[in-house]
Length: 460
Image (cartoon, rainbow, N blue to C red):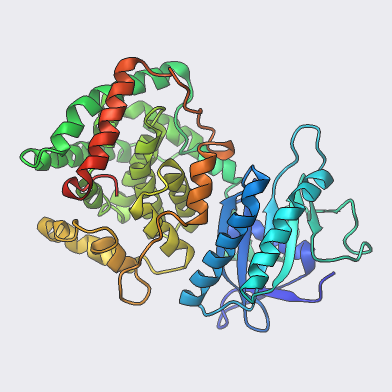
């Protein structure tokens, strides 16, 4: 067993010392807020006692050919992000979490992922930050890629501790920290509808809305009217959702779906493709407004059925923002990750995802949005140039605008290649899934948004 230990918590608060792979594996769900199935997780360590710092999660790329370049980018992203927040990390812990596929044991899964673990260790070492532990978690067991001693890390692995029986579980319960379930469960709440009848009806409504809304968004003479209509309808839907009683997540989501019609959802989804309208909607982030808005954004994300999957970037980003603003970082990371999977170049999602992962305080952006709400015209002044203005200035850790590399981001590239695989439970886009009218409308929508660019303020 590796002779090191890691401490959770801040230096001035209560600390929990974790010794060895077993306690590290048990701590992972509490660090993330959920069980990160089918994921690579990297956690930065600081100081002689190994205080946990920044963390990063990405779905494991399916193609082994992607592992080395993805490892390089993950290592660079975690280390550079940690430097901006807590200083250069003194070590890194890696978790590869993936249950075995049909006919494959946990041990075979571990061996299959070993080259990826080695790529990650090499990438971190090349940046002069050692990997102190690399674990594979599969089928309720864990293996260490770093410990060669079979007496403590046997070939068959070791079983994970029973839930709720460890010191980390006790400390988390005392602190009020809850594990939400699996990543797959959390993403399912935001996944597009799959029932053919429901999906078809929503697709038709989106086709109709695209034909009428997008040309108006791109027409400067009536663009403000579209924004007013979109925000007014969204406010109405928030009020409708807010009047219902709280319930377990599955029941709540089903009830919310029934309260919003296909045409209402389509109108707001298309209206939110305008950046200025989306920014005004982002001001609903606190108190009763925040909770009602979060339910609406989740509902709209579920309505972005194929072939309108890219349109989910706006409601998913808003859902992530409200979750982060209200202190729910695990839900924020999941929603923002899905937003970037829907549209890897969606700038607002990039900014929020990076800021959330780096542990920045959302209050700076909240202040900007409050000011925008008090004077609607103030928000329009920063809508011209990508990487500048309200969003990037507010999310900057040290004053100047936070610049995002739109192509080189490892999570973004992986999402672009992987599309909606695995965790989203979203259907793949199939040729002919929608009729010629829908396909034509979709092309018009994309072309209009792309050509509108900075003039229209769409899709950023």
